[in-house]
Amino acid sequence: MLEGLLANADQAMVNAFTGGFRVAQTQVAINRAITEPAAAAAALESAQIVALAILVREQLEPAQFDVIYRPFATILPGPGHQPMPPVDRQIAAFLRVLPTLTGPAEAEIAAVARVLSELPKPVAQTGALGAVGMGAATLNPAANYAGAWKEVIATANQSGRTHSFRAMQDSAEQAAPHDGLGIVGFAGVAAGGIFMRDVLPIEKVLLLYEPFAAAVPYESLQ
Image (cartoon, rainbow, N blue to C red; front, side):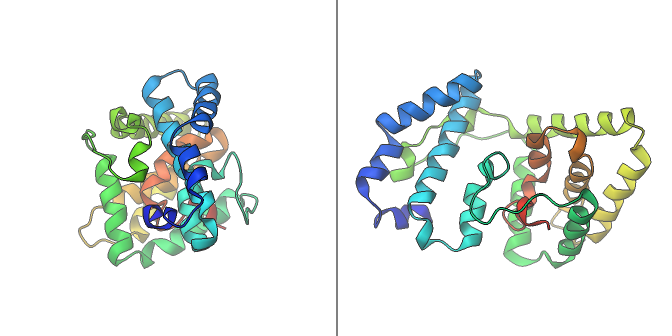
């Protein structure tokens, strides 16, 4: 989507965020916080894509921009940001939307869920955005996802909230579409992450919610 819009953007700015001084500046800032090479490369790629989206923001629908900007939405709120609502209200919003997920939105959720359930495959990138780093292909989303879920379960047990945690998970699984696309269990995982958000790093919550992020951005659960 961005590829076509960037043709009408200031090419000097496009070049600045796909190579050159701005990329070098961003890389230095990222390397101060992230030492693992693959994670740093993925962070750089994400920052570059977000910067390019900002360049063409006026050509995007607000919902489209929100999805692209989402990696930074929690730590650096974007336009129209609203404070995070209480956990019970956020979960209620998630449960309300689950039965409405059909068609392309549900298919995308299932596709992302599959990525989070299997080993990653190398991905070739082409075009203007191909200048963005390749580090994300060397990460293991499935291992990170499984690790975050184990941490949630352990934290729920340690905090004496196992019963409520399981009840919240069951509620989401019952509300999700049972039509064979395989998103039921992932709905339970997402709800469990939201329920435990007060005792988890936000990046763990967002990872567990990831299959639903495009169809229902986390920040929209008001």
